[in-house]
Image 1 (cartoon, rainbow, N blue to C red):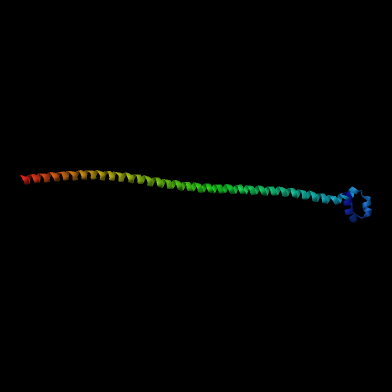
Image 2: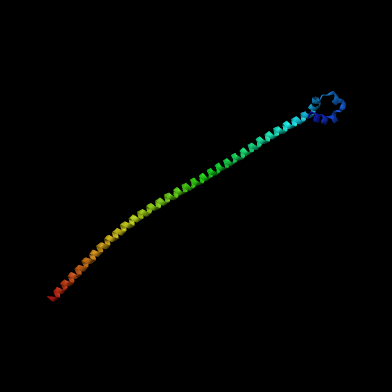
Length: 144
């Protein structure tokens, strides 16, 4: 590598100057920028790897935050649906209570009408018996 570096700097220095330097001295100025460039490239590559991992982590965090926001929105929707359901249940319970009250009233009316029907049937039977007794008495009076 030192010989190659020497060969690279040879056209720049001239052969008389090269003869006065040893090979390491001749190679040092030429390799110094190359080493700095390699170090800079290695540093940039390391920074790129770090930046890529930061970007990947940011993407994962964004996905996690999005999932959490979606879950919270879904939770709010579920709570709203549950509240609406509770409201509907309360309305349904009130309607069922009203229906039960109406059914009890109708049962009382039906029972009252049945009692009146039984009383009317008894009255009709008594009237029929009174009629029969009157007819019998009338016949007895005619025959006497």
